[in-house]
Image (cartoon, rainbow, N blue to C red; front, side, top):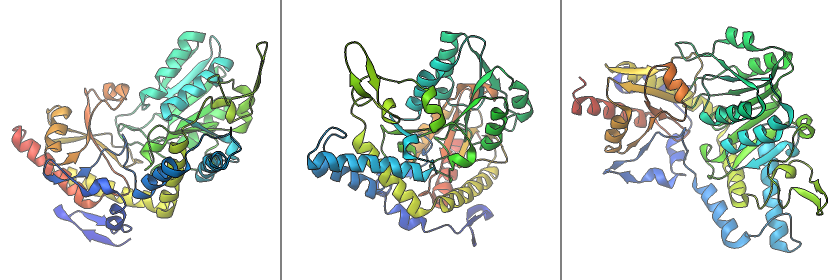
Length: 421
């Protein structure tokens, strides 16, 4: 790509037409605190384009009906749209079949589904679960709960000073007692991209099941679950230009018979008597009750939008933006970036001197700049780097070099106001 020289003498690649893309997101056109909104909290939740909002509004306004239960036209059309969304997701991550796609409430719900439906059925005392030191709480706490319940042992892959996983220690942890390896593909706290394909292969060598948390990966880079070789893969709609309240769990078909129901109720059954219940086939076996129909339809529209952009182009744009932002931050004195992994996604966690991140975030908000401040539901990561919290800027396909420049100017103002320099 052609490079454009920007402020500070740092160059940024000429990306796809990001300024036209921004027109698709009405929320980005507003002002906040008297300044143009600079939205850099995408790792928490991305914005939704007009096409997604319009598609959900159309369903809610003139297409609404429940699914799987009706012979009337609205019901059959709603079912077709809902199940069409399942096929769209399957194609997006290259699953072998839409039967491998389970709709959940989000990534946290997906992890808990695996814990309850697979973990409680297959793990016992003395078995071991391996997680990494870069996990979100949602990929730690459920496994701790399972260990307490069945007597399993939780093992943790250590993190280097650069914010990368110690793969030598990872392989040392794997043994004949390892039953499950749960790993994040991209750290939500510091942006490290983990070598999950290599890790899955290592887990398979000892007969372990492999789960990948792709919440921070699916919105930003191409995903191929068959190439990764994992048994489970999960992500959330609201981080990939879709609505809240919808998540995806990819569960390889070979795992289905090893999984019991997660919740009981309607639609996850074939036959109910007071003596016995016969469960439905997957994926419906894991989707009790009325599903998030409007959200699934919105997720389908979000996938359409991302695929129209091209996930490889999205990744290239965001990588260029990350490089530009890191270059500009390096020119600032008194700012420490947490995590310097060689492979990283569009997340920057940083400290501004000894200023608490909450103060940094509050002052930046006054300039219309929305970042995250806190432990990012990754307290073990904060403990590893001996910080109580960080300020976190995270980019998406609609962010620009102008947004980065605004962030840099905002940090300088924070330093000036609080006397850090």
